Image: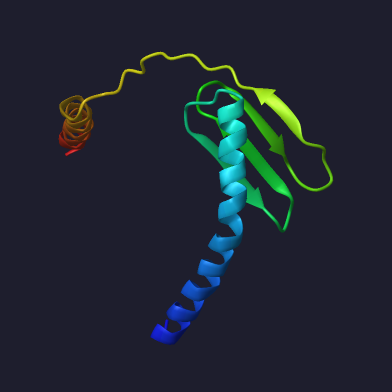
Length: 110
């Protein structure tokens, strides 16, 4: 990408940021009004109408799949539990066992 193109894109983004910042400030005010003290996220796809909004304090989110569907709120249940993973030595031992068995099978046939 040419330096001129990068500079032009930066100028376009700067103009977008200037227009977006007042809206972000308004969103922050609304979050404060509702006692939200954690992070909040929003994702939007202006082409399809996809939209998600959630605060990181709970498992609720607002979602719209596309422009053909209404905005919904959803609660997502989650449970924390530990998954046991094989450690590297255990994985390697398993591979060595396979290789040893294959060699022994080969040796029997020879």
